[in-house]
Amino acid sequence: VAEIAKAFNMKIIAYDPSRGTIQLQDALSSRPVTFRINNSTQVRINGKGASVGDLAKGALVDVVFAPDKANRGIATEISLLARPGVSYTFAGRITNVNLRDGTVSVENQTDGKVYDIEFDTRSKSERGGLRAGNEVSITATFDGENYKATNVTVTEAEAAPKGKPKTDEQKPKSDDQQ
Image (cartoon, rainbow, N blue to C red; front, top):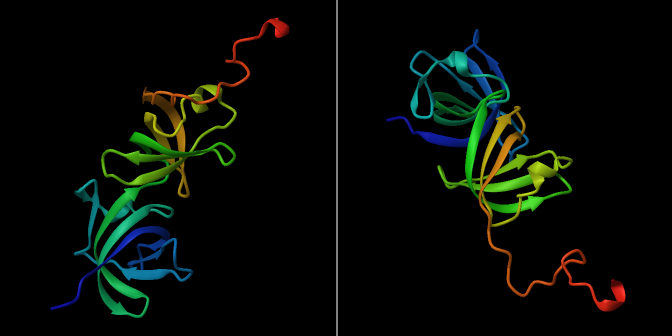
């Protein structure tokens, strides 16, 4: 009985249909891993059947494989997680906002994973509701590297903490300032 292993959240860096190989890279390793693909390799999108024609450079995948040689295996199942140019909707609670880098982290209700999504820091309407604790729905397009927000909707704003000091705009003016 052949041993089965699984590789998570790998990025396709090369795909050669004529040779039946796919080269993947994960975020932690500097060395890519090559898998052979054959007629029995199943490709899935959202758990449904797809084809090897859906595989593209830049896509994120999970792979179930049978080890073959060092840094090489035979892919038995490839699940496409994200494909370049495709839009995805993330709905959940904001866990972090980085205004300098223009990224927001959302704990997605669908799968419980936290996703970092880039947004336009110049857009006041986009960044206005981006506060940790707010519930949002964000539509973002995957570009092969990152998710880029195309639509941000705050579905539930977290109440401001009590006892927080007011900003100068919110402070009542004293008689001396009026």
